[in-house]
Image (tube, rainbow, N blue to C red; front, side, top):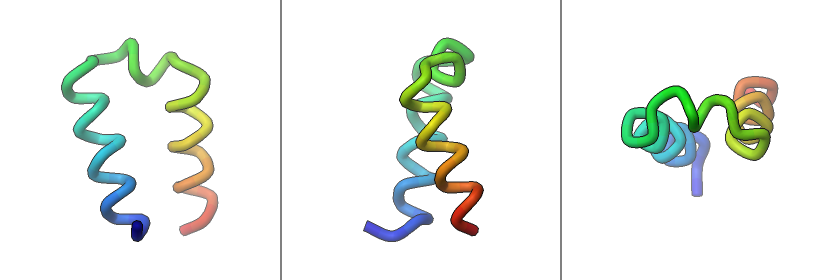
Length: 38
């Protein structure tokens, strides 16, 4: 799975779940990891 697909999935998850998704530790870690790897 490439970074763009992962990012799209995360972004879609945020849109579905709203701000609560951003506040979950696992989603936050995944997003930070993705951004740090760019």
